[in-house]
Length: 119
Image (cartoon, rainbow, N blue to C red; front, top):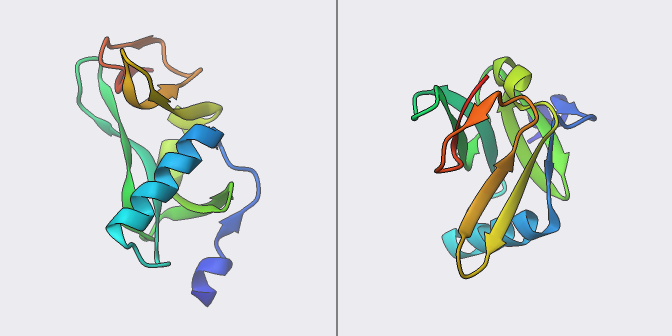
């Protein structure tokens, strides 16, 4: 874990709301994830609008930067930051919507599903 400490960056490009952190901590507990796992936030090509969000637990990979956001280790590939700077991740638990939402100021347009965007 010492090597990870050398990779910590101070200014996280994304924000996690309290609701998102609460739900992520529940998932980590229920999946019994080890301390080596962190939240991976990123993008990949595809989806109805061009890009899809990556959100899941993973281990630290080469090319990643480590941010500590609200006590969670967050891993992000350096190349993805340009698409994610300023994004807020929230968790909705209402009658009409349940799940993680992405408020991305870099998205030129988004898909109705809320997990795909164009930049």
